[in-house]
Amino acid sequence: MRSTISGIVGLSFSFSVGVLLLSLGCAIYHNWWPAFVVLFYVLAPLPYTLARRFSQDTYSNSNCGLEVALFLTAVLVISAYGFILVLAHHESITRGALWLLVGADTVMFSTILAYFIVFNDDDDFSY
Image 1 (cartoon, rainbow, N blue to C red):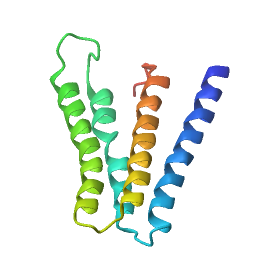
Image 2 (cartoon, rainbow, N blue to C red):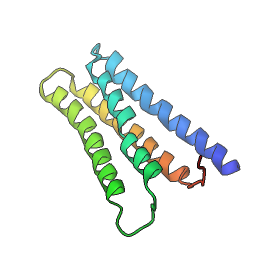
Image 3 (cartoon, rainbow, N blue to C red):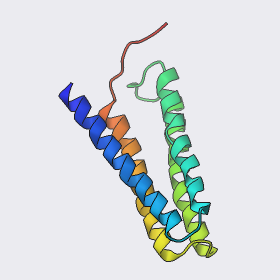
């Protein structure tokens, strides 16, 4: 119970740091285009979550659905970094905003990864 509460507190703290970096990257430089990266934060854990929910045997040697979900998750994570790099290359955002947003992406995706590590218990809930 204690480790669950400390996990929740740590995840909420790192999530708030990520949102703070994202907000600073947008607000300081008066450009809110990078805020669209929030869509990647929402979409990135969905393939893995759905694959884990609907897969029969998570620990088998080969699980095609889970491997495709991990691939799609990696594509979404890389696309989030690519989105802000394209904005910086197009000079829609400044270099300072770029570094704040790279930090926000790193913190947010680390938080998502930590969530799956901390709460990896496979409960036997079924209908």
